[in-house]
Image (cartoon, rainbow over all chains, first blue to last red; front, side, top):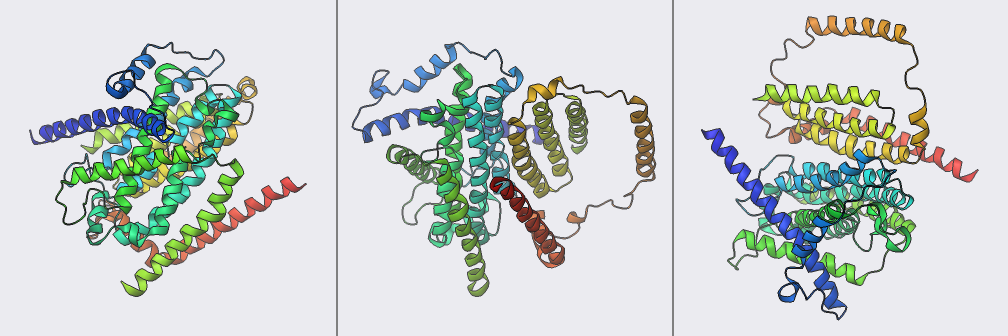
Length: 323
Length: 169
């Protein structure tokens, strides 16, 4: 009986997280269109519902009903598997994210490491999509994406080592609790900057959206996709933005922990911080131009990589001498 | 509780690796190898080595195999598919299979690890095997660890030098 109730509770938690995340991800597309529109002095979607609030649902329905085209010379199995391969890791990662002090699906002692490992699989979907489409634009987009994500994964991981050394644990919940004395962003500003840049590149966001640079590559790796498969790539992109944002606020901004003196529940703090982080992602898209490919690689290897190594060295030195 | 999962993962490894070596399309083979790594990571988790499992997924699947796919994607797979896959060397293949199979069977049959009832990382009162691994790696095994680091560094520099020469000439 005990194991049955436990399993039931786990399933309910998973269902709740999946449903909420899918809905939020769908509305992130709306949020992005609205914010960019207002930054550019437009109104954005206004027709469907009040101020276009039902637009994501209309879009979803449209994508459901659209014809699902599989190119004749594509590798059909890989072509169908690719969007799934992108979406599944993006959602699996939510199993270890701490949403509040007592709401999370599970806690494992390799939490953060598991997140890095699982999210490193997303690149497979992109590579598979690019190759299976049997189209030049898709293949070039996939190649760029693979090189970019592989390189920036390294900086992302190394940037997280600084706060990890302070927290002394890979468990996400313990990392949050370790920040009760002060958020790690104050101790690790360098690591946060590198983390944020790497996160932008990992999620293929402006200014690092080279894999889908429309002026050169039509739409990059998902050029040949339509209907629900296309929607999967988009859902995965926004789900990944939420994941990196959550990792960012968990490691640098104290996760669900609030500012002392303001009594708000942990979940509200979490949502507030997440919303701010995502707003910055969208804000940057409306502001910055795209980097060139060689610039992207130069920034990464010649600037950010030495920076994170110095950060780790300094953190270790200070921790050894003063703590 | 662990036994059914053990059989599930082991069956997964056997089936995916069999499929992997029989595909004529290299990309399919590479993707099946990723699946094999996944099941292997599952086995590591069952053995209580979560850190190793995560490393398996992160380094092998997320790192090395992506690079493999990266280079395979650039070659013409259609040509490779048309090349004859079986080379009519069945006699030698079966002979080697029998010899190797007998060797493995006799070694495993004796039981290599009959005394290891408890896994090493479960012995001490360590909080989790990440901490245990870290402390062992930087105290007892710090010299081999550093030697391996230098070895990897040397091979990396070698690879860069080799690649650079080709670009110049």
